[in-house]
Length: 159
Image (tube, rainbow, N blue to C red; front, side):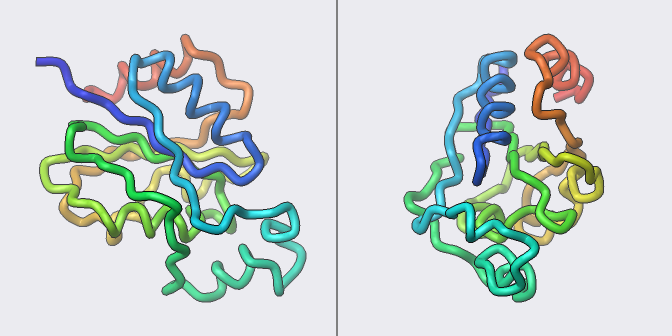
């Protein structure tokens, strides 16, 4: 039996979306966006502004921005969760997604995009948001990564 795979992603600027689309195509997976109920604007993600939405969410670790719609992970065996690295971790909306699903019997693999940071890409800091899942450490993926390299990475995960 082949495993049913879903690639989910949150992307504020389009970088993670583009990588997620190539990943889904490379491995023949379904693709779904982790969409916040209130989309992020350029001002919202200005990390230099302590009053920006992303800065406030980072400072308040218990914040969980609402999702525009739920994502049904029930039909899937493996779910890839992609996100941009904000302060070396996933944006809070990713935790909203993880904490609202039943992960028993599911495998989660993270991937992250960042211009510089690699810390946080493995997803370890997210494990407490989906403790029932089997976690496979993910990695940072370059914005320009190509499908063959993505397919090779996934093949090497032993899923």
